[in-house]
Structures are given as structure tokens and as C-alpha cells.
Amino acid sequence: MTNSAPTVIYKPSWVANTFLVRAREDRISDVDPLKLQKLMYCLHGWNLAVRGHPAVGERFEAWPHGPVLSSIYHQFKSYGGFRIHGLAEEIDPTTGEKATLIVAKSDENFYEVFDRVWDRYKKFSGLKLSEMTHQPNTPWSYARKNGLQYISDQMIRNHFIELSHVAA
Image 1 (cartoon, helix red, strand yellow):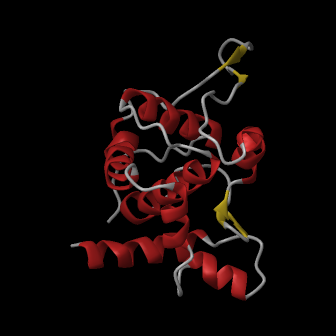
Image 2: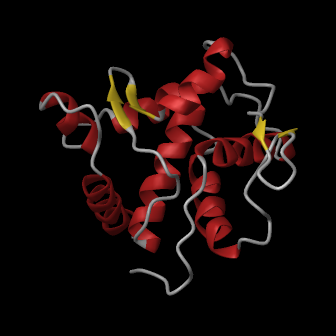
């Protein structure tokens, strides 16, 4: 089911920062690069299923350890397997200065899906979330088995629609 709200697709760093800020607010202290990648994948999948469009303007790649946004990998790889304590910085398009940007709190359509994803997955470790993406017949497993670099948004959307029927 798609919504008639305007389609807004965010920079991955804004979405990553939004997860990291929410983790601080909720005192969730185990968000490492692996968990962040999987949270972003889940948000992307549920956004595709609910809204009919991507949450982030970058395609997920089928890396050996699961779905990955390469820009987020490079932004946070220095943390290794440890908790991320910083935020992604970039140039603010409105000021031209370095800033840490998040999705605007006023974007109710984004937060409708984001809040549900956060509440559902925040309690899982990065390893547990990775196990979920590695199940047989997931978009990641299909891409890996077929030697594909990218995971198709249509496959991700179909998978999360299927998950919604199982969870209902």
C-alpha cells in the first residue's frame, strides 16, 4: 500500500545519523557499524513495502556479511566492531559548512515508518540482525547466490511485503 505523500528519498548519512541520535535518546548503546547497516536495510525494506519508494538514495550491495550501503560503510568503518559514538559529517547544502544532519523531525511520513522499524529492531544486536538478512530466500541470499553486486529494490520490497503478512 502506497501513500499519496510526496516521495522523499534521503541521503544515507542523514538516515544513519537519525538512527544514531535516536539510539542516544533511548540509551541504546550497542549500535556498531554492523547494526547500523542492518537497521538501515530494514528501514529501506519497510519503506519500500509501505510507501512504495526507497528510504535512501543509494543501492544496497550484497557483501559477504549482508546488505551494505558502501557510503555508510566508509563513513563508519573506523569503529570496527565497536559502538559508534560520532555522527556522519558532510557539507550542509543550505550553509555550505560542515554539519551533522538528520531527517527533519517534521517529516511525519518518514518517522511513521522509522519509529516502527526502530521499535521493532532496536533490541537486536548487529549479529542477530545480520542472521535475519542471511536467511535462505532473502534478497541478499539471492543476490549472493547469483553473483549480483546490488540487491534489487523490487526484491527487497517483495520480501518486506511478505514479512508483513507473516507478522500480521
